[in-house]
Length: 156
Image (cartoon, rainbow, N blue to C red; front, side):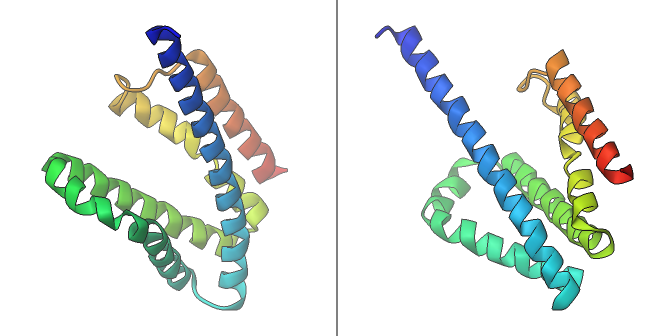
């Protein structure tokens, strides 16, 4: 096998793993919405639900990665940690407002509207990381289809 075909096979596998991870993510977010709705309706306030959701998520992801933390802290520049902090802050805001949304609106409306985030990601990618991500007409068309679907769900 040539080096080029080996690289293509590796890239193809990487993309397949990415698609698989995205599907598992969708399953997790979908199930999480149902569980969170049940919690905010029957047991706890949206902000308590958010706090514990983020706490359990941090433990679930953080504990297995503790072995890498020291190595990553020493290797990554301070600017990288600022981006990590911004990612955490924006994710926490997203989770908080999603749980507030499912407390006030039906899950079948709140979840798809929240699901419009790919369009936000496309726009922000264009302005902030366009050298790392390629935005094609298909990407934009897909984002617009998402918004169209959200509109149909929200008003239908």
